[in-house]
Image (cartoon, rainbow, N blue to C red; front, side, top):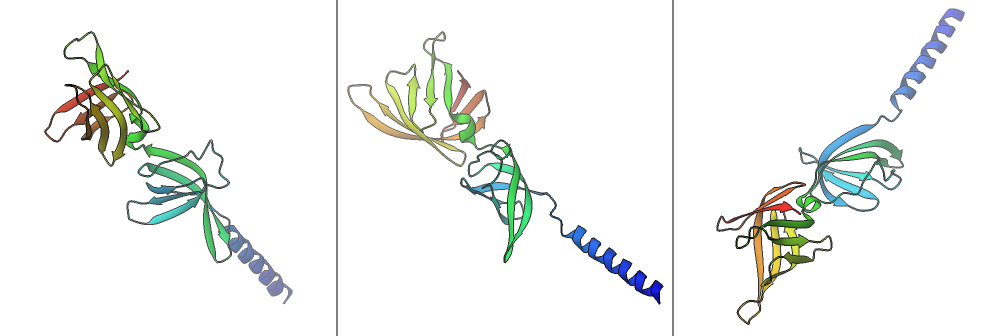
Length: 194
C-alpha cells in the first residue's frame, strides 16, 4: 500500500514537472514584410498572408532597430501570456531587404555628355528635398518613392520661362553604389554615388 502511495506521489510530481516544463516560453521567430511600424510595435505580413503584431516597447534598440513599411524582416520574439491572450515581445530584428528609400538618399551623378570631365546628376536628401548637380537649367525640387517608382519634381528654367514638371521613373537597380532609372520611353539613366 505504501508503495502504491509513493508511486502515486512520484507520478503526480513528474506530471507537474512535465506540465511546468511545457509552459516555459520559448523564443520564436517570424519573417515577413513590414506593413506598419511605430515606436512600440511592428506589424508584419508573412509569406502565407498572416498578420503578426510584435511589441517593441521594451526592446533593446541596439537589437531591434527602427524599420519602414515595405522592408522584409526577421523578428525574434518571446511570447508572454497576458490576461485574455498573448503578446509577442521583440528581442531581435534583422532587416533582410531594405526598401529603395534606404539606399536612395545621397548624391548620384554621371559624366556630363557635353563635358565628360564634369559631372551631372542630383542629390536626394532625407527630408525628401532634391537639388541638381551640374545642371543649371533643370532644378530638382523634391522626390518620393511609390513602390519601385521614383517621383521627381523639378523646374526647367531655360528659354526665359519656368516649367514645373513631375518625372516618374522606374527604379531598375539600386544598391549602395549604383542607381539605374528608366523612364517610360525606355530611356535609361545610369548613376553612381558621388
